[in-house]
Length: 419
Image 1 (cartoon, rainbow, N blue to C red):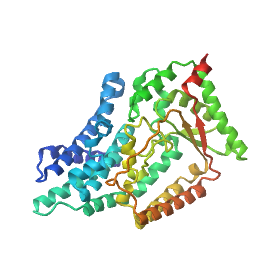
Image 2: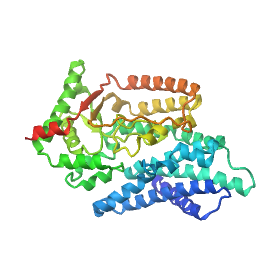
Image 3: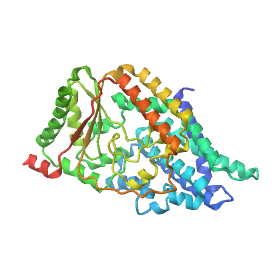
Image 4: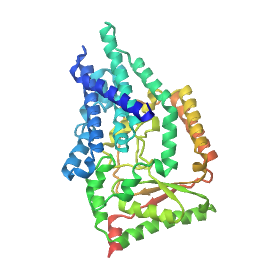
């Protein structure tokens, strides 16, 4: 069998096992509720995969697309978050501190599947489903043997070896998303969608809220000359800043765009403008997986949609504490160096990111929860050392890196331009 056939077989086997979970029994009712909850979410992911494969994005009306989008994000929305297993406080209350914290982190990792399923990355889906089934099986095995359920440490050990095993492919995928336009699954959506048909917003797999819908609708109604003027200002500012720094933009081949869902009409023109400068654009999703360096703040770390719950993102901003130690940090740096080495030419041609930042982000004051994972003192020291090592690698392979902040004008300025 080829790699694709092997993946399909693994997917079929793991989904067969997940479908059995709701009908099985665990002596601990609260653990049973948690695993059923996660299994139902994975069944929703499977249903979403079938929907996408069946050309559902094209066939479905706006109401169905909205319903599906809400279903994927419902339990972490503020109105439901208090009793979500994505909430560390609730998970610890229901499952105990020892098991609740790593099981909460496990569920957060499963939620990264939303982005992966919309990008059609089957391997990323399979390995996380297998991780969940491995954890569940450890509880079933303990029960069948008359033993105590796995401890928090045993759960964390399973998570550790998952992170260890997939450090290299995760580093390779993430770097190629940044450097190689052909690896960017959302680019065709930006460049080929009918942006007057707001159903396109649901093709990214990101949360679509009122703000994203309103922004896309507003931009769709502006004249083309206004869109062109805004995009031209953005890309010319990027070129001039590169020139002011005494760097030769003609030596570069790619630029990474960071932006928020809803601005695709401007982004399309920005991408065209960069192409005229000889730069191909990459657009990659803000990290949803802890293996990719998931952050507490999505904005400014890639492409992202609406933020369904900033408290949820904050609660899981340091989930790497589950497994981060010296050996893993060293392995991750080795994996990153191997990824850069394999993509040496693409790295040399990278002009750096351009963050297309919109106005209107409301202030947020997070609640600091004792139940959420936080890096220990030693882990913080290792994390800073890892970050320094990763930065050194970046400077070694990406020379004369350029970072530019492109601020999109507000609605009033756009209206003025259109008059």
